[in-house]
Image 1 (cartoon, helix red, strand yellow):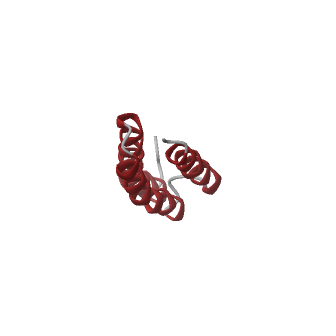
Image 2: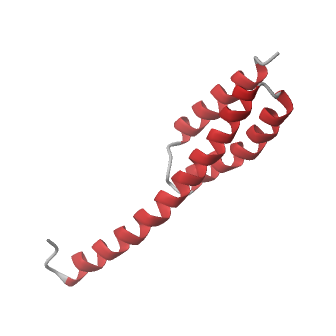
Amino acid sequence: MANTRSAKKMVRKIERRTEVNKARRSRVRTFVRQVEEAIASGDKTAAADALKAAQPELMRAVTKGVMHKNTSARKVSRLAARVKAMA
């Protein structure tokens, strides 16, 4: 347990930051899931639109420090490849 005032303050800051990051990560997952559902349904235009919406969210997660740059790029690349491969 934190003893000093600064350590106690850091614990409070970390708790707040964790909540924000959880919400951001959840939002990214939602957008990715929407793309995957559109791919599963077989609707290419819906999948392309969902990917267009998901891409900025994934990149925003990078700028906010929630996700690593390469992780985000990999996810976008794989989703784009799956959308492109649709008939």
